[in-house]
Image (cartoon, rainbow, N blue to C red; front, side, top):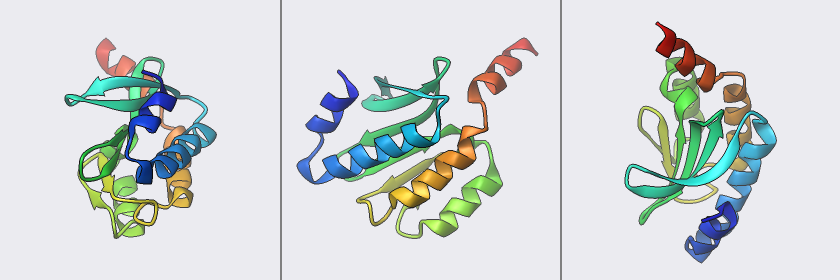
Length: 130
């Protein structure tokens, strides 16, 4: 399945939000390539840096999610966005939201810009060497 097909298969009321968020990620982190893959038993748009998942965008039954590996590994970054997105629900590296009002694209652009300098691939590859 392509990214376009994934978004087209999402509920109609989410398609514009998913498209905007997808385009925002690509515009603000040139290190990633999108591909649709399975994660946690669901298909998601994965944004990979050298074959390592950096972000994932999902549309589930009750909400949409952004999985953000750099945020998972960075408590100050996580705390910054918990404060900026009070209508979203946070887990360690995941932001759940119901619409663009709960996760405005402008805030996503800042988050992805903050994360773009963090190389998940380099971190994971260096960890394997130890």
